[in-house]
Amino acid sequence: MPHFFINSNKISNNKIVIDDKENYTHIAKSLRSKIGEKILLIDENQIQYETKIVNIEKNSLEVKIETCYPSKRFLNFNLSLAQSPLNSNSQNTIIEKATELGVNHIYPIFTDNCAVKKAVVQSKHEKWQRIMYEASKQCERAFTPTCHNITTLEKVVQGNFDRILALVERLAKENLKNYLNQNPIKPNENILVIIGPEGGFSQREFELFENNPKIEMLSLGDLILKADTAVITTIGHLVL
Image (cartoon, rainbow, N blue to C red; front, top):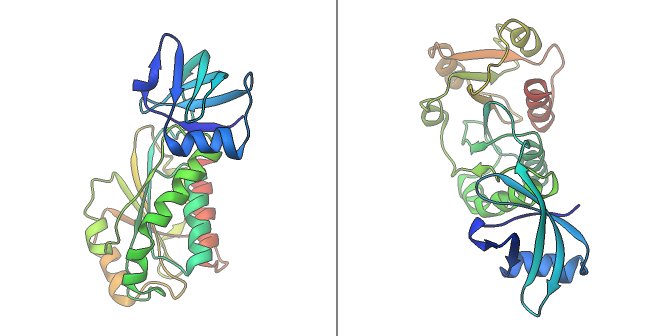
């Protein structure tokens, strides 16, 4: 069933008016939805509405609410990803899959071995946020996560996180799977995962991790994974 984000101020007398251009065009023009068809809507309060189309006008349509309930399409902890951007196609995949897997915040970090120029990363911000929005619609997330502006490792680790997990191919104390078995994630924990570029972290960045007692340096085992594979594998361990 198609899923769209709305604002609760469009709800009145058990009906919802959809008159913003993007949603209207998608529903009425792209999907060619008809009166009587059902669509899912969710508002800024994370309330899900199962609705049926009752009227379609030139620039708006109206649906009747059949049932509503709080959405459950989110993790029971707050997961953030700090990641050194890759070239376009791989990075787009990372943004999409991280959204599908429940990440709430993505922080592009400009590392010493980052393969993409800072100006290029800055120019991609709007596109990446759009990918997150579309992925959130497709997988019926309760809200759209946030893609932040490019930052540095030094700044992102100063955030208010309960745990910071840095995935490294060298100097790891233990692997992620064993760590999580011994230290399971608790509800409402605020966790940051850090994953570097294809070239790995620099010696300076390793020292930053080693000198911060809040950071756990972990591996994904003996295999060396590409950065995009590492992102999906790491988040999968955390959420599944």
